Length: 214
Image (tube, rainbow, N blue to C red):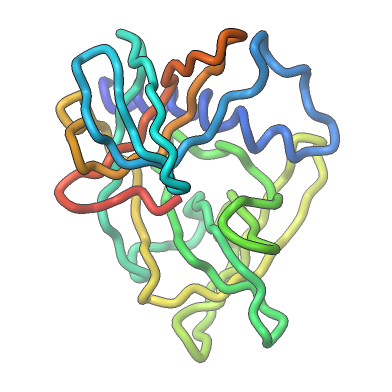
């Protein structure tokens, strides 16, 4: 029950930003949409995180009692099964195909999180596809996976992505604040208040050397 509560709570937060990419987007919550921050922890005193973002900027993020902390565990291409709900970050290749740069396999309790295909921020023309696996065939470099989805406007779509066994493939697992230690890599969503203060809503933190690749 604890694990399911974490996943359901995480789903609410993780859905917020992808929703902005849809045609029929909802009104943003007070204070604006959550901020996505990828950063390495420098210190944590139990209430505030000092982190260094990918661009080198140091930022302080408040951690509230209800901030959800999770982690990821390593999986392999063989762990991806038909009808799994997965998220795939991808870049277009010279062959005209989309090629995955990372894959995260959602637990069943998180099926439907951020469903759709939309632009992402991991490089020029990068995309994120959160969808169900409806086809898998061998390719020259792993598997070619067909992903089927319905976005927030109700439009159905299908995307094919090549997945190499050499890219990071993970699944979400529960975590706790003990993971928030110096040197740990994190991906978090935070609320930005009018005064600029950031408060973490959800943190996915490195565990046992496995860094969140999203």
